[in-house]
Amino acid sequence: MSTTLVYLDARSLSAEGIGKAERELLTIAAARSAGSVVVAVSSPVDDDVAAGLGRFGATTVLVPSSDVTASLAAGPAAFAAAAAAESGADLVLLTNAGDSKEVAARLGIKLSAGVVTDVVAVAGDEYTKSVLAGTYTTRIRVKTATAVVTMKANSVEPAAAGDGAAEVRRLDVPEIGPSATVERTEAKPASGRPELADARVVVSGGRGLEGDFGPVEALADSLGAAVGASRAATDAGWIEHSYQVGQTGKTVSPQLYIAAGISGAVQHKAGMQTAQTIVAINSDPDAPIFEIADLGIVGDLTEILPQAAEEIKRRKA
Amino acid sequence: MSDAPAQLKVLVLVKYVPDAQFDRHLTGQTPRLDRSDSILSELDEYAVEAALQLIEAHGGTKAGHEVTVLTMGPDAASNAVKKTLQMGATRGLHLNDDALAGSDAAATSLALAEAIRHEGGFDLVITGMASTDAETSLVPSQLAERLGLPQVTLVSELSLEGGDVVARRDGDTETQYVRAPLPAIVSVTDQFEEPRYPNFKGIIGAKKKKTAPLSLADLGLGADAVGTDGSWTEVVSSEARPARTAGTVITDSGDAGVKLADFLADRKLL
Ligand SMILES: Cc1cc2nc3c(=O)[nH]c(=O)nc-3n(C[C@H](O)[C@H](O)[C@H](O)COP(=O)(O)OP(=O)(O)OC[C@H]3O[C@@H](n4cnc5c(N)ncnc54)[C@H](O)[C@@H]3O)c2cc1C
Image (tube, rainbow over all chains, first blue to last red; front, side, top):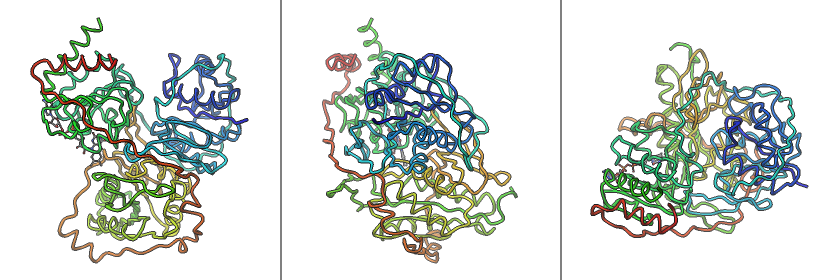
């Protein structure tokens, strides 16, 4: 009987609910190891969160007996390794978030386990992922007894699988070793819109917006979409860096991606060309983004975006 | 500031990768990346820039500080080191061995960790945020784990303060300010300042700089510890995705917003 350990960053869990990417991990784990899904959370959780994890199939929730989150990656990895040993897991699943990948990286060395990132499907000891900016789909086999895998969001449909009865246990954390200390944090304002990484619809804006994201936000809101941006827009300071889509930003695979005022540089395409449907709005008929768009509209975004937002709102009303 | 180590020794790790401006291909029975048309990874240029700025803030090479650049790869990878010497790095190291081909992150981090141990005495090891070929971003954290050093990863600002490295990290929900004692492993994002271009003086100066070869034997590693044998993962199959093709292109004549709504309704995306 195989045991799956799901490692979760406590910041992604709240009484209001468990993040979608996290629910997906629990769903995969529950399908793979009915009856023995152990979840390790980076900080202690309250009863509501534990029950929420239980509803998605967790049978045991392990929390660290001391604070591990102030030490960058090293503390969470030491705790995750202890949880892997305690549970006897042969597969550890994490989300694809930057911090989770770092925990996965260190865990791989601690457990002498192969690590696969950006995975979209799990089948036995083989993991599917796309590489080279979405141009190839590969299957990767893990040769070691334990595998450590980070999963991309939107890989499965989250499904409740348990009865909410998860046992919460504290686990002693082994020696963390030399690490960086997080001295201070500044929270970023929440937009209230869907998370970019797991949204089904994304509306992105680029340099063509000339500083004003209003028209992109209005269209996004009419569609219930997440907002994204090109690096030109984030570099200009028009929008936070965490909204950047592309090679050095987020990789998104939504059902619909709308790019407004974005030329379609390779680094931008690297983050969005696996979207099911792509719409591009650009005043330059030769913009490379049109080469990959299902619908290309040559025109001025300051006129097209507001008109589309109004029309969509009218039809939905 | 006067509190940097008397002689700051910085090591930068760089990779020679297929240029993403061209089509990139996987080839062979066990699929491998075709490595022709390669360049110094753009993301590693930020690491070189960070190293140069760090020593310059403390008097530069004149004050005895050094930036050593290490690459692991086939013969042609020395081109990546050459460019960093032109940018201003002090000297190069090239770990080159046929057995290294096909190494995954675990095997790569093993070889690099042994090379770092072998050279010894670095205050900081700086890397890019990810390689632009495999894009896993696993190696910096795995080096920290293997070498037992603090990791200060994915940073956009970096300085030395009271013998520590201090840095800014921009996450999705928060910005973190972190501190670690030296020696440490650092990775920098492309939010760091733009990398410099080699100027004429740099290009001429680089001709006098040396790149020393390193082999697996130098590191005391057997061929089976790295490459496909030493890797914990293997690519079993690969399939090229059909390239996207252009769909309909229309020109706005005053009603393109409505046509966009029609298109979305047709595709059941509303
Ligand atoms: C190492 C590295 C990493 C990078 N990573 C990323 C990344 O992750 N993501 C990313 O996006 N980029 C990335 N880039 C940058 C990338 O190369 C491009 O510079 C960037 O994507 C360009 O952004 P843009 O399309 O908004 O701007 P531009 O290329 O300037 O395009 C703006 C477009 O807006 C159009 N336009 C202007 N006005 C209007 C109007 N009124 N109506 C309609 N259209 C209009 C123009 O015709 C033009 O096509 C990276 C670059 C490097 C070197």
